[in-house]
Amino acid sequence: MNKTMTLVKHNPASFGVLFDELFNGFPSTWGRDVHNTAIPAVNIHETGEAYHVELNAPGRNKEDFKVNLEKGLLTISYEKKSEAENNEFKTIRREFAYSSFKRSFTVDDKINTAGIQAKYENGVLKVYLPKKEEVIVTPQQIAIQ
Image (cartoon, rainbow, N blue to C red; front, side, top):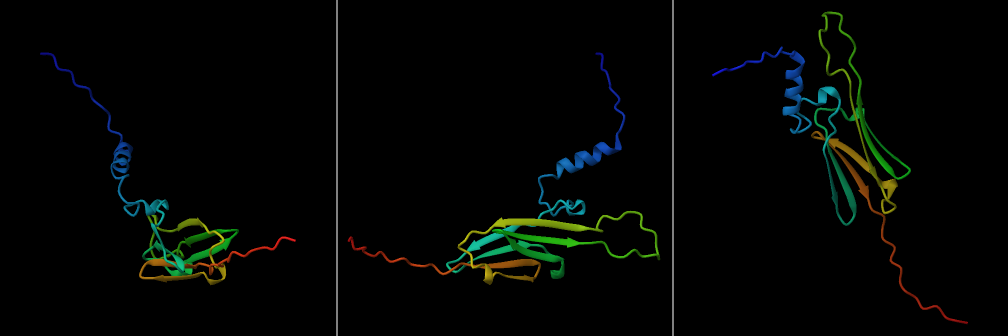
């Protein structure tokens, strides 16, 4: 029996690619945030009075969030810039120097935009979007002249 063997030169970068592909299906919080690609998960609930948006963003400071409403688009963004350099030691690798994300949602004319509120607690940014009071139009008979 004649058996042949093929030698393949090891490419160190190929293991990293294989590792990334292997874990690509896991939640974005697993190792992807260091590359600034993770986008926080959002829950949106509706009640009779309002919409409630909950954005899962633990470990952040509320001062780094911005919630804006412009032309019917509600935008939630976060930006944390790097800390000042420390001259006491030499940094070999820095992966958490900058972090940001942006999520946008269309807001229709049913929302009372003047009453929108936001609160960050226990790692969740909560945005309250109250609905406008419904104007009930009663049918009326129009006299013909």
